[in-house]
Length: 164
Image (cartoon, rainbow, N blue to C red; front, side, top):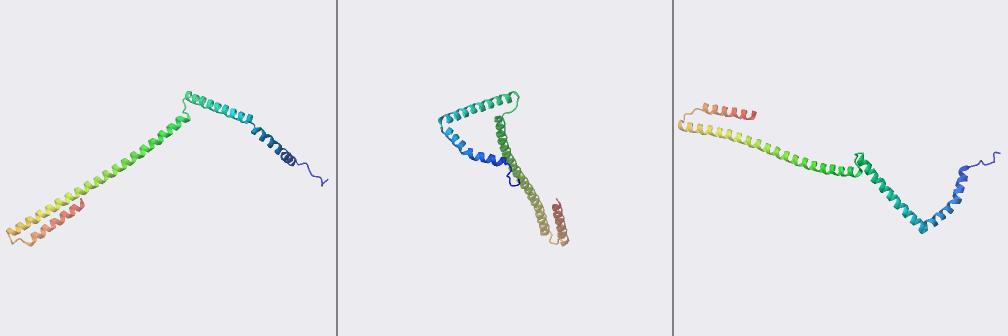
């Protein structure tokens, strides 16, 4: 009894498949080569396309009645959003350039103001030097102490300017 082979359903199915596969292949090849099969497939595809078109139209009508956007509406909205994002990017670039320009102008105005202040201080110092020279020319006995006092006032003015 141990020598007997048990019944194998899978082996039987594989054997049946191997024997019939070539026959079925020949039958289908012959039927597909006929003109009738091509006509049938053409008609089937036309019917399927008509069905698909009908489903598309009914879906669009349903969505319109339900006040919901269709695929076309969503794609139009997406293209509008992309265009809007591009415009926003352009505006951001313009604003950044303008802010940079204004910042440069502001820095330039500060520098000009600083130069004006320095020029005024230099003008004051020059006037002091001119006054001292004129006084010295009028009275040669001008003491050295007065010159040193004017130097101290000049140095005080410099420290005040630096603080500003």
